[in-house]
Length: 133
Image (cartoon, rainbow, N blue to C red; front, side):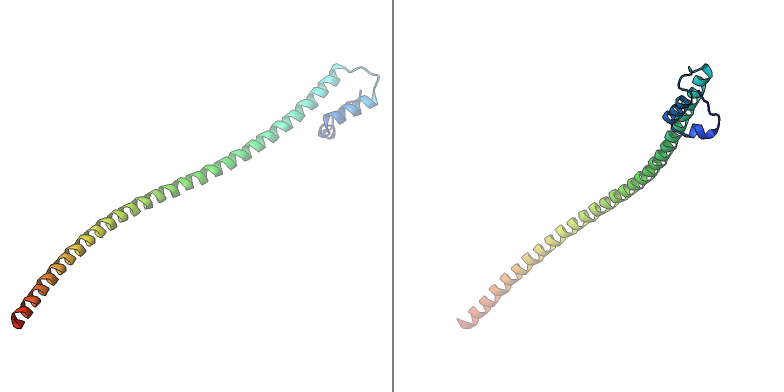
């Protein structure tokens, strides 16, 4: 069995390494050293995969942090909308109160003007009645 110690053999896929090793010495039994080398190759491959997962996890952490920032901004905007909503409710209450006062003033003025018209009409009719009769 042929063993590779250069970095290029580790770069290959494990299946390719095994195929290369067994093609060169197909009838030779594997030694402990061959098994150690194979285990080292597999361990390095898993270490590479673990480092890739770590990189992906760190990227997800960054994206998650960005989402947290955006969420905080939305919370601030939501608080501002709640504040504006409260201000609109206050303005609406004031407007409703002023509207009610204005309606009462108009009614008062209308009743006063109606009373004046009744009094004036009665006076005019009385004056016409005294001059004509």
